[in-house]
Each structure stands twice: as structure tokens, then as C-alpha cells.
Amino acid sequence: MKLSIHHTTRYLYARPVILQPHRLTLRPRSSHDMAVLASSIDCSPVAQMDWTQDVFGNLVATAAFTEATDQLVIASQLRVDQSAAAWPVFRTDSAVHSFPFTYSPDDAAALGALCIPDYPDPQGELENWARAFVRGEQTDTLSLLKGLNAGVLGAISYRVREEEGTQAPRETLALGSGSCRDIAALFIDAVRRLGFGARAVSGYLFDPQALAGDPGSTHAWAEIYLPGAGWIAFDPTHRRVGGDNLIPVAVARSNRQIMPVIGGYLGAPDDFSGMDVSVEILVEE
Image (cartoon, rainbow, N blue to C red; front, top):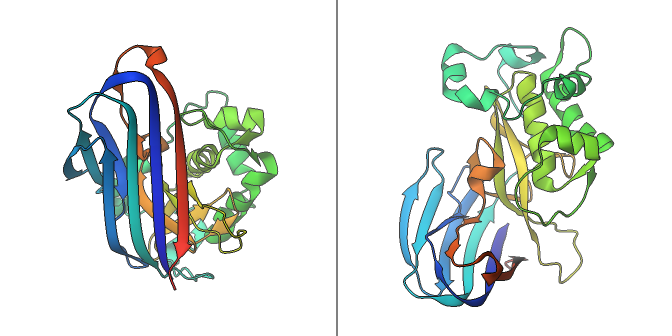
């Protein structure tokens, strides 16, 4: 399935400001189930782009600006061929069929901090919540993960949250609601407390059932590493497993490391007057 993705971010300022360098994580890499056919990023005012790869291998552009402006527009265009199976079969190594299991020394060393929770849990609330999904001393690993992935929405309601940043998992549990990035962060921290290697993913969600004119959306989800199957996508916001209809752009230990646009300006706090983001995802005939 070939998709065309148009993602535009616009910042408005009350008066011309000096833009500091902006970090743009908007260009994905090709993988076994997604080929990047074309990509471009355009900025207004025009920026000098320097490309690099971060510690996770994500493609990152640093945009440097030379002129003052009262408006910044960053427009990303992608064409991808997404071929992830709608009903995937995950062939994991026999050693990890049952939970609990232990990663091999090489895998454990490579996963490192991806197995370590990112948020404090002094009273053990989050760990107790996660372990409530474990049925017995030995349980099927994939069934456990699928149950937890589906069970998040039993405790949490999805809501659009415009504020920047990610809620701490304990806060999400206490509030009983959160955005997709909050729900993903809760899921990631929960599975890490069970010993799994997990990472955050940012990208786009394509909904083929959406009404005509639905623009599409940015999205956040998780991936868990299981030897034999590799990195498996878990989307607790939609109770889905596998990469079908997901377009990953970047992966990292936490959401804050893969925000699509990070940058600032030199000026007074009230110089900033607003921003808007639009995403359009179209199926190519």
C-alpha cells in the first residue's frame, strides 16, 4: 500500500523573532515492511539543513535560520510503501515462549537501558498494576503482552491533550486518561517492570476506515523485543498488535527523544502567539 503523507507545523509570533536551530525528526528509514520512496522537508524562512543519525540510528535534520521572522512553517512530505501484515504471526524463539524468561547475555547487553523503567514507582503501584496481568507462575509470553496491550484501555480513556510533554505513568493511572503518547509511555514502563526490552515509537497512523476528508494523524506507540520475532509493534491506544497501518518515523528510549520538531527562539515569552499542526495521509492509486 503506497501512502502519501503531508505533515505541516506552523509557529506564529507576535513580532519578528530570531529562531534558534530546530531539531527535526521527520524522515523515516526503510525497513523490511516499509520502503521510503521519497521524502522532503521545506522550511519558511529557508533553513540550512545538516543531517545526521542519533544514537538510535534515527535520521535527524538540524535546521539553522539566518533571518528574523514572525512565522515559521516546516513542511514534510513522504511517500512510503507500507506492507506490514494485517494479521501477523510472530515466530519467537522457543526459549521465550513462556514468561518469565531471560534474555541472552548478548541481547541483555544490547538492550541495556531499554529494559530499565524510565519513571519512579516508589510505592510499587505501577509494578503491581502490570503484574496483575500475569496469570500464574508460567504463562504464554505473547498472550501476556497482548493482554496488557488490550487491558490498558480498561484503566485509561483516550483524550486529546494539547500540552507538550508526556505524563508520568502513575499520573496517567491516577487521572484515568491520557493521549496516545501517555498511553504508550504507561505501557512501556509497565512491560519494562516485567523485564521486557521496550522502546517508544513516533510516526503516523493511517486509518482506512476513516471518513473521507479525515486528515490522518501523528501517533505514538511501543515496540517490544522478543528474540526470533525481533521488534514487535504494540499500539495500546487502539488495542492493536503489529505494524499494519502504522508508519514509524523514529524510535528511542522515551517519547521526549523523538518529538518531530524541537526548537526555540530568542525573544520575550509573549512573542509566541500560537502553533498548529496538520497531517494528511492519502492512498496512492
